[in-house]
Length: 355
Image 1 (cartoon, one colour):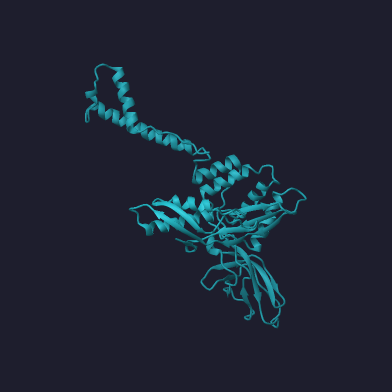
Image 2 (tube, one colour):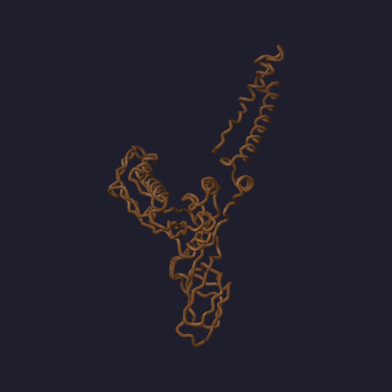
């Protein structure tokens, strides 16, 4: 899908102009184009202008191709040709639980817009408006910030910022928040459009994956058809998903699944993998620096895996030897390829890679 266009260089344009001038008159010679001579100045100026004009023409040309357009040019192209818009980023969503020891105070309406937060200041706003009649009730929340900073662990939203009339009420979140994601990058946007082309028939596994990933905050999805009804496993940038994100995907898949065919939506489970390597370094390289580069490369390779995708030892080796300064790599842990369950997502981190 990438379009490559060769732009003529200054030297090439200069030589073309020089050759054309020499063909047109016998009064000019090679010496006429010596540095500083009038013909050298004319040919050089013409070549400079030609190079700039060619650069502008190529730049405008590349903006019209899906594989090379970027930023606002890609946005305009995607909307005009495919009716697709870039995801502007997503705020994490979740559920909080308000509790109190007794209902002696009476009914309390907890208004939409009420602010709750973590002790370190990550704030969430209520998007539902529960009426607390007993001692406990749940409410939907959305992070005030766009991106991963709104993804927090379970039991960490414990601060009620907006005052409530019953001072005995406390708050917590039974599960982690999920779905926070930065604005879609050019490469991610292009990939989603490619997936969209493959799903125009709808109702197919590829269509269900594309439909799930069209929900802001979902970065990977797979379909398991081994049992009926089929299950769509989803994950946000952290590798999992909470019930709020699952519900959002379930609502969206009504537009993608076949009529009458129910689809289950389940958040993936992260399985962390420890990795131990023995490296052979090329002489002359800083082995400490190379070791850290290998750790980063291996983690990137592992964390690119999709839900249910096998981690092959050969992929670990390929990532390691792809680092300059590494001649060979032997994987001692894991002892073999690692195949996760259909709902599992293999992930690692630099502190889990031992060299």
